[in-house]
Length: 138
Image 1 (cartoon, rainbow, N blue to C red):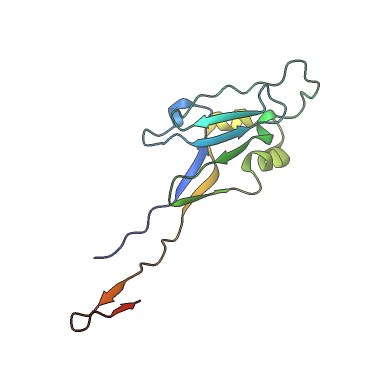
Image 2: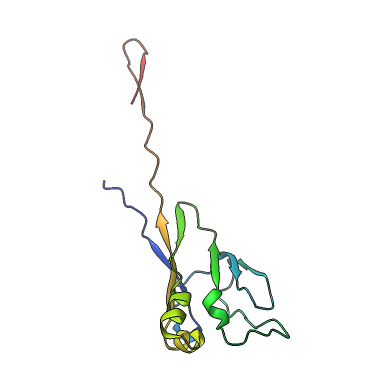
């Protein structure tokens, strides 16, 4: 029987709840957004959002889009490793296009990272002979 490799996954961010697929799973980890009214928003793995992101009260820097600095620190599920897209697509699009990232996220979600399956450890086998009881590892 052929052993199946677990499928890779993608971590998306969306602004429109109707664009979150039904099969989406909530992430565990931390959402960081410098300049927002929170330093680190814990993602507990029970909700796909929405999560409120607002500029710190009295902030002077209103020219830069807050979403350009959003960072997801995802705790990958067992058997997977999280790999953030680098550079961040949110920061990259702000750098190339300017404006507000929220306008683009309302139109379509974007991939901010990947869940890559980890290689499975090799299977250790011990064979014991029936004639003398010796064992051989392999």
